[in-house]
Image (cartoon, rainbow, N blue to C red; front, top):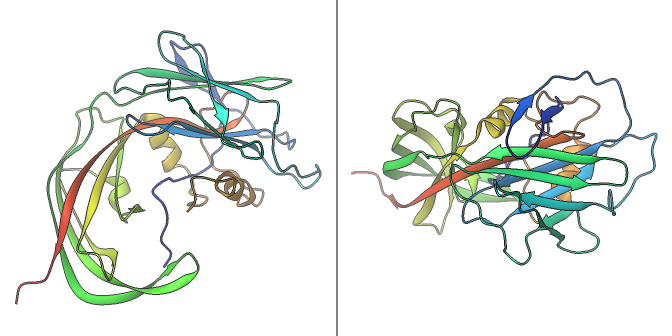
Length: 284
């Protein structure tokens, strides 16, 4: 088994039709052009750093490029149409950030992404969930058994735990949800319904006695994106390998959803709540 970061990148296919800051709609489009096209990934969230990944789809008939679209200028705006320019982390990276922290993400607000290239402009839009799922109660009991887990290519013994969570979901059924612990997706939580969840397969490092349980509410675009055919989960969220792994994992088969105009990928949003959970021993 392999542990993965909670930043999930599942690239998809349907070119979205999104217009100005005020409206959006999604439209299917056939894939009959194998020329490389822009790949965009960004999920914005309150109290989280803003990051935008930009690369391009891979095609062996075209020369490989270390940095796709070096001329790209990336902007974000809210409903005030005040476009704020993001900057590359480094000159040789595909990650753009709000280095001066001028951009604020708020619940219930709509935000737009614009990427200006030499021959086209990329657009996308997301509305941050106005209300989020909440954790009412959470318990975690160690089974005191271990299982070997592959962490960064090295097999390590991890404890196996049982977790029980009681939660409340928003009325809006368009949102999606998932839970993470130790920065990893809790298997089965990506399809939460009702008011409770249980898993017998929460893995924890042997020296851990507690952890932050996080419950994330995602916007409808992100939900549809994650519901499309899963291509990969990416461990690193800070370097070029994240988006490159997505591109190289296609093998010529693209999944089924995107909300990026003039490209593919996702511009989505989420809201996360957290609760500290103590790992207890089983009753004797």
